[in-house]
Length: 186
Image (cartoon, rainbow, N blue to C red; front, side, top):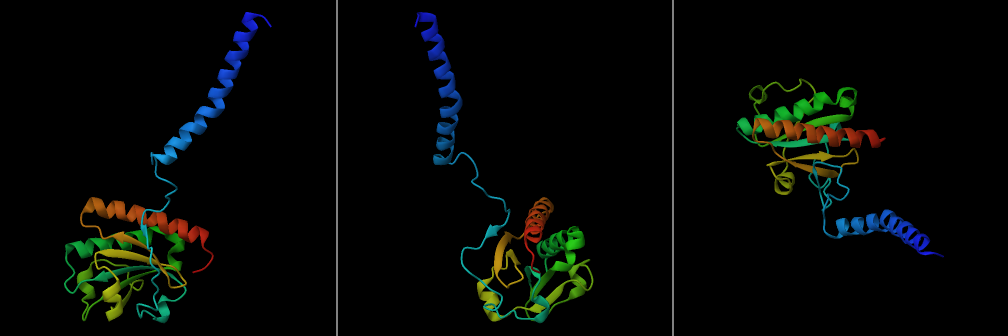
C-alpha cells in the first residue's frame, strides 16, 4: 500500500469513528451530567406515597368511577381561592367531549356559600364537606387529580396570579388529556 492510500484509509477510519462513537460518548455525558430533563411528560407532581379516596373518607357514590380534580375551599374564599376555582373550571370546560369522564370536586369546611364562588359550571361541580382525615392529609394550597380507581396521583400548586392561572390551566389540561387518552376506565 502506498502513502496516499494509507492516508485515505486513516481518514475513512477517523470519519467512521466520529460518526458512530462521538454521539454515544456525548449521550453518555448528557445522561451522567443531567444536561436535560429525563423523560418527564407530566406537568403536575406525581405523589410518591399512596393516597386513596377511601383513606380520606371520600366515598360519595358520585365520586366513583370518574377522574376527579380535587380542591379545598377555605371558609371565606379569597381572590386566590376564586382564581384557583376559575382555573379548574376553565380546564374542565376545555376538555370538551371528555368532560363527562371528569368531575371537579370542591371540599369545604363547615359552611359553603356557592354564590360567592363565581361562575362555576352549574350542576357539574360536586361539593363535599371535607373530612377530618382529608383535612390532615391534603394540603389546602394544592390541587389534586384522582383516577377512577380512587388513587390520588397528581398534585399542582394552587395558582395565585392571573399568569399562574393560565400556566396552571394549560399544565393540568395537558396532563388530563394524556391521562384520558391512555385510560380506558372512567
